[in-house]
Length: 100
Image (spheres, rainbow, N blue to C red):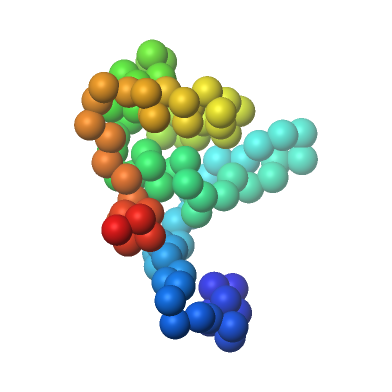
């Protein structure tokens, strides 16, 4: 899908994304829709750890998928807590490439 973006790529714009594709077993909702492990929240969890993000969010989840569900349901609150955290939060490489 990302290769479609290169069709109209501009010289002064770099398209940054995680080249890896991640999968898991988590499903959501009544229709058991597969969770998308290739979004920002799972990327931030992969760049850090369950322990670190539990500390940032003041939660006590025991699995990555439990935290994935929490982060998906509380996107704004999670973003604000990450932004205002005094902990050193690591960001995914593709995000760092985009801002540097």
